Image (cartoon, rainbow over all chains, first blue to last red; front, side, top):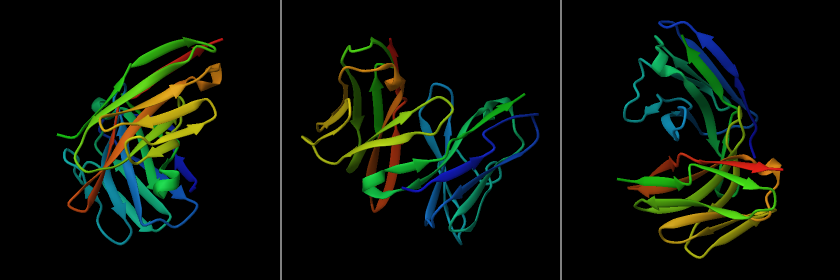
Length: 114
Length: 112
């Protein structure tokens, strides 16, 4: 199964600033997925990132707040913009390993906004 | 509305005390049900995929089963290292679009 390197692992940020999270995959993948995991809640899909096209955002998430880049088949970034304390969460990237391996996740970025 | 519910929210077991975790779902177009383990500070780690009612899969002390309405993750003679949050997710297919819905997880603590 794919191996994903995600960074930073954690950060504490001031409100109003932005943070960019990076994910590097050790193999080429068509789609990469970005999730948010708020305390005590399930994983929620933010958007799906395809190489060469704009990301597809889920209901409740907008590009201005969560811009995504996908410059090639092994790399993606998610930016959390103009942060507020409500953005404090764990952010995860993921790729689909197929029916045998399921989804593979990065180790997550724990974001705290103060 | 598609929904996935896990119970209990938290479970404390003594080492060797077997138990089961539940994942019930109400979805249209079920494509597969997935179980994951998540350790603190880490992303979810894939355990099993189940596709049809009656299917069972095993891995060490874990056994996953599936019915038309729910899935169970049975833990036999658990050890402290089995302590983690266990997540289930269903993959649905609607008009050719796949969607992945996660439950909120069961936090398992196994005491030595």
